[in-house]
Image (tube, rainbow, N blue to C red; front, top):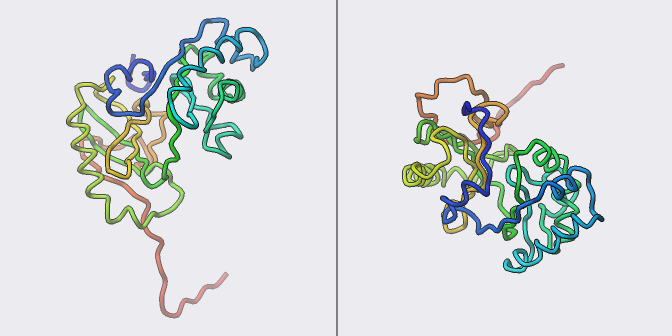
Length: 239
């Protein structure tokens, strides 16, 4: 399988990288249970069975949980828009998984076999980054949320880049592929947590790298949205 078509399931890479990501529990889905998600069935015995199996792992994590499937999260739901996906009960978790078109597509295609349960964490946008790893080495790093320039990142970008370089060097032998894209989060103590893996190339968004057709033999370093340009003096504008 080419690098651009590889699928990275949380339930598979977590076995090697559990100490570099959020603690995660898994509930495997039967074929009938997967069909229930695809059909948005929240009332059948299959859905009720999954909810019961979700109850114990969700109880392990204090407070709210974040629940997704192997290769997709319900980021296209109203719940994610309003509460960043935080759920408290198995009933709520199942409901929003069924509502998500992204989740249904991942299950229907066979890319996802498990429900993944993590403790919910309200993450700060400026601390999320996308890493571009080529042949086991960090080539480039992009600000993940391209919403605006974050002034606080200017003073931290070099330390973030060095931390990412060191991490990739340390765990390269554990990665599910030598060439891939890895999404990460920096905690307040500067610890890096892996959020997800994506295939190299389209349809993965290159974000600040803008395009995949570039010279990847030349390291691109850390890429951030630049500060807005300030104009001073007399400025004449005509239309």
